[in-house]
Image (cartoon, rainbow, N blue to C red):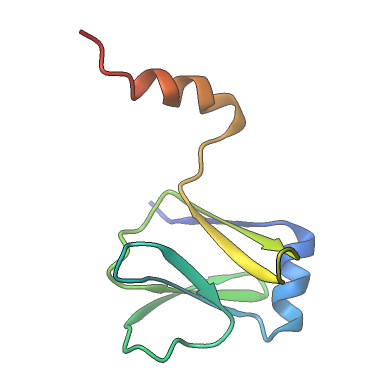
Length: 102
């Protein structure tokens, strides 16, 4: 199954203005990072084209069903990658699924 890439028109436009490439990787603590320039650290990337932009995902990140990339202007302009985000209708199911029932 192919990974789905979702970007809003505003996010796509902001990424295209910055070259059209987005690099996504994890730091030592497991936090996701996204930049339009390749990181200085030695990271191997898998390339996923999405229409007129390209995502470069660190190869150690397992492929999700869906990547959602959001462009935020505050507190500074940046891209936020979301790995298999929960759909709005699935929030209740996600909470119920994570409850430790007796």
